[in-house]
Length: 85
Image (cartoon, rainbow, N blue to C red):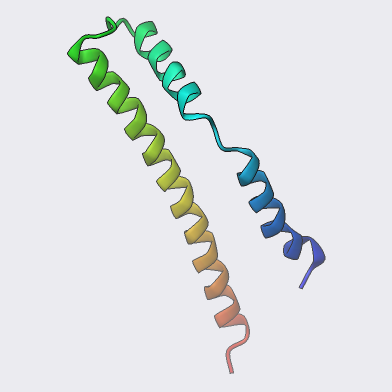
């Protein structure tokens, strides 16, 4: 196996460990986004905007994870057909 291919998972894990964001910073960014969109703080629509911001972040994370899973499945299928008896 190519050396760079073996190092890739290690580097990816290290990068993910460094990429965690502070929940308070995320909340402040979401609040700023909702205010910029015209929602008034402490209103019901503002709370819904914050909820949507959080849900969108979670969906983005799930989509990225599914992309990695799809890459793994494609890699497994490639090896299965390449090394078939």
